[in-house]
Amino acid sequence: LTVAALVLGAAVLAVLYGPRDTSRTTVTAQASEQKTVEFGDGSTARLVGTSTLSYTPNMATAERRRVTLTLGRAYFDVAPKEDASFVVSTPSAQAEALGTTFGVATGNDTTEVVLVEGKVRVAAAGDAGATESVVLAPGERSTVRKGGTPTPPLATDLNRTLEWTGLFVFRSTTTAAIAERLSAHYGVTVTVAPVLADASVTGTFERDQPVAQVLRTVARTLGADVRTEGDTYRIEPSS
Image 1 (cartoon, helix red, strand yellow):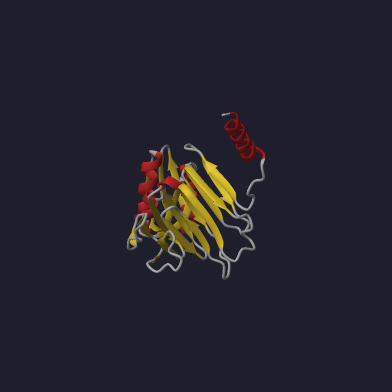
Image 2 (tube, helix red, strand yellow; image 1 turned 90 degrees about the vertical axis):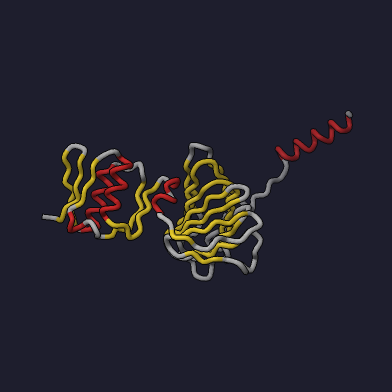
């Protein structure tokens, strides 16, 4: 028993004070947290809720940029880099991109990838040659169950599917649809002049921004103005 106790004590000391693997950096977000990870190549990842992400610190010079999302949800904004793909690995899948924006949500058995911009290839974990992969176009998603293959690309409502990011994600979204979403989120009335209702807007906004700030940006994109009266907002053509 004495020998066993000494061996156990030595093992604990080795874990606490022994040499550590510094080849990877690990970032963990708690249940109520949101963290942004900045990689050396200009790419970023927004971790939302209980999430764990690890990566090699030499992203700027790596020929193949690799990160691992062990658990949770992350929204990636990948900086284009010639001949250097960006690979996100999870317990059940891998997603590979060159320069794009996409969300990844994973548990122990299932991973969902949602593409916002660019192009991303989704394959099962361990499928080095991506022999049964699918390629997503913007506005599509795919799900991979552990031991299975990716589901065919499926069109999705980006703003609803990526609500967990804490962002409004509008991609060629009509101004009328944006007004509807903002009205529901902020509990105010947002209307649009009929002549602008079908105009499309592309943009990403923090959901905790004041509604007036979001609307001003949307209106500026359209060359329009925002009229305000109490809790009522209206986007109208500039006078």
